Length: 82
Image (tube, rainbow, N blue to C red; front, side, top):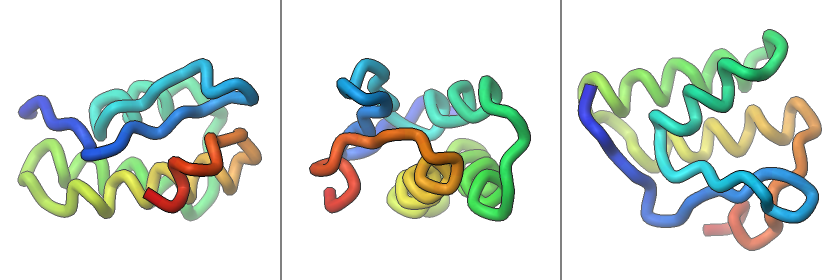
């Protein structure tokens, strides 16, 4: 797996206390969550694809945001639109 970062990190938490910089950070963060639903699985798959095959870096970010919203984790508002 190669190291990749998103153009804009995703800040998670009520005060944006955790900064997720790319698919590797996202996978680590997802592994700390209880099993999620459809968006959780989609985020895991997209992040793995980005790291293993270099596919859809932006899609991995969007999928991670979807998973965080699905699990009711607060995300910094300006990170959702980026």
